[in-house]
Length: 232
Figure 1 (cartoon, rainbow, N blue to C red):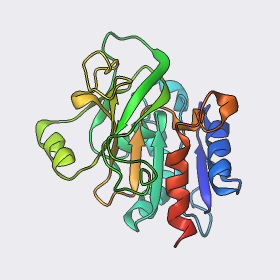
Figure 2: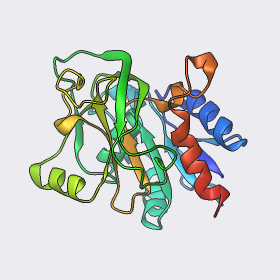
Figure 3: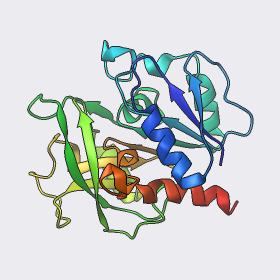
Figure 4: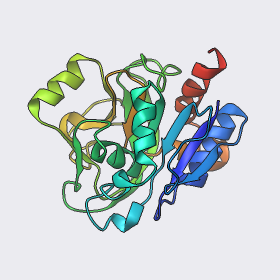
């Protein structure tokens, strides 16, 4: 699998993402600076990692969504390419119109840096196939603007089309208000595009892919997408 990680000014999770991808695929991903205007030939997966692109000086992800590389990523998406956006990457995907909704300031207006628990809401996607539906796993969160919001029509469509990938839950798997620390609508932590080939999520599965990191809870996501291309 040929993975490309996009590096924006202020990105700080590109190395974590590279470690996770290499562990799952056995191949180092390429890191591409945002001022490039084309993706490398043979790209299978584009990853927008976490951080604070352009210092979050406007809306989070808004400036990165206008970067020179983004038209090529939009074209890649239109042709059915696979894209993963985590934390700031999720924000960029919504700002670029590649995923619906928006990421607002956290409820309580506090930056959240802690572990959370996620429930897998669908195993029917290239990013979640190594889990079972309703399985719960642990993932770190680190964001100030992770409160996913969308209008009622969009929410109904996400629910009806099985496009909610993950929800914030308790360790026992219950989607309670207490588990939903950033206040996201319907406890939503991650969503899929209409063709299910784009995933945006706020927590960081790449930070739990090795026992030395404290666990391997996030590894199935990377093994899932790697498996798509191992059998292609």
